[in-house]
Image (tube, rainbow over all chains, first blue to last red; front, side):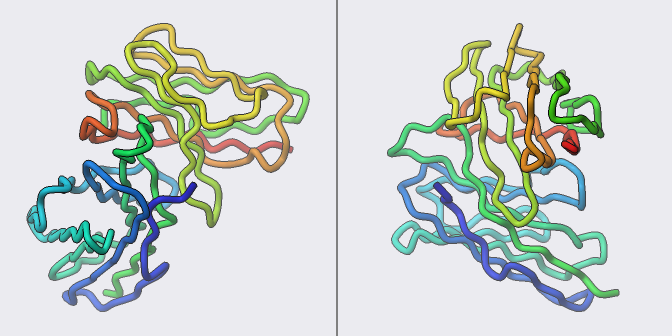
Length: 113
Length: 115
């Protein structure tokens, strides 16, 4: 069953602006991860946040996690044309014992030059 | 270059053909995964292997048959597929399983078209 669900499905902004994507999930988790995918390519890991963490930074990326609301957000600051890609959140399932990550449908981000 | 190599990158096959997808990882990881990515659908986890043993099969039809001869290699054998099986098949590996906070490293995928 689908675990993570990103919002919005598509986002178009001007270069230099900040981009915010949200993810909601359904079950208890040990960690939440964000991945990026360029068109037709494999996914690349961006950042992992553990269930006992509330915020994490990596370069221009900022991730928040609210386990009480079962939601996370990914903020990309000072966006660049090269940030154009699809972004996915992924969760494990600490209660179900699944061994793989469950991904959402993703947010397609377009950065207009 | 993620350290995970998938071949072939593109494959076109008829419904009666038998073909295989190959995945090799050079990262020394213990877990390997097959995911299916179809248009407008979330990635679907198909199979998980940990230390060569299958630990998860998400109700995948038997026309998909995985094989993991060692921790570095993973195959997906395909036979009598349907057109709806056309998709991007992604292989991934991780040092630990997802619930152990394992970050996945993905290959570039094999784009499969079933005619």
